[in-house]
Image (cartoon, rainbow, N blue to C red):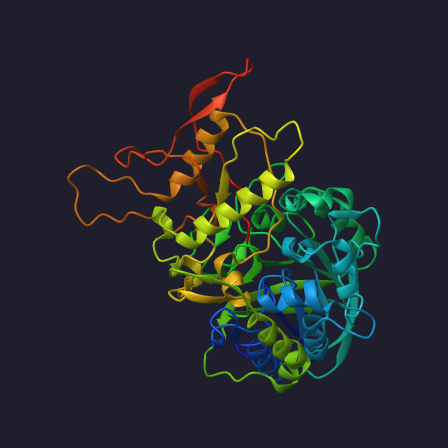
Length: 519
């Protein structure tokens, strides 16, 4: 379908008056990449940034009569700019969050929240979104000490028919977030509860329809997974799309691109057409790398009922030649300059360089330094407690190890003076440190799962790939303080240790335990 009227051309006046072309534009997983700038390298990066996506959005909106713009969450945390605003500068009635200021300037119609939007705490999140001039929706989260966004919305929009006449379309919008959100940030337990995605949507969508929605769009901060719903699914977009009453799905969370011919075609997933359970769907990458576009061909009958006659979906790359929108750069320029000054602050010295080039085979001096710092912190916290004499191991995982982040997504800190920038480079997310008492069998299962990153190597085989590119590097946990060996001639772990009912380790043949996606 082309721009403008989606390629529809009707000569009959009555037919033209009943047909409408609606375009849905979507961003997802911006992770505080407001400007096309790499704060860790302290240089421009033309591959990221909402400011450049904004220019493409303006272009795709100008040449289409009926356009909606949504964001799918994880916009608040993920770059040093976000950390500076949260931990140093703050937000308030007179200090709007730069991401919200940028989104206000772009004229978003609605948004939902992602799991990382809660990472600075519910209080900070609520203060940040108070400044939004567009509504948020979240159907499967209940807050105990703050007013939660509404479970769903209905947007009344006048849209233009092919003959130029106008009608009111009522668009229902529902937002959803992975139920694991409260597990990934344990401090959230006292502030919120999170329900199953599919169950929450199945309860809410009929209410949206009963309230008069002509069309329902799911802003689903969840990845594309199995077609059959299972309790507590993290990646539930396919099962969600199959629910009656949902017409289109904006998905995200896993930082992938959909539709894409390289995306796996599984039951319910059509990566060529851009459909989940037969319905239009899109996932727009990460950091403003892509713009999600869904074009709908709508018909309104004589009784005022709307149907979708056809659709097309695409994730359009934001090319390096697309300039940054001045209105977005202006909205973030003060925070941008202050963040760069903050990151230049000197904090220590290092006698040797620290790189993550070989972190996926366990050789990462920066990650070792992080592990040592974690161990020191936990040991200090456990002084004068019943656990003070327990041995302390330290687990860490490489976030910057190439892979989905691209060939520049590595840490490289030179020897000499260290700054706040270098500290942020060593460990991308300022996650909360937690101490967990574990048995040896649990550690074995944990290491087996991490070892799934390695492919099976047949003895005598040459030029065999070692790393499974589909395995996210942040799930490759290295446990500092242990020594272990991995037999690469065996298949990636299908045999792992579990503890039986008597507390004894037992060997069972089964699939490896799943680690949650921390995207």
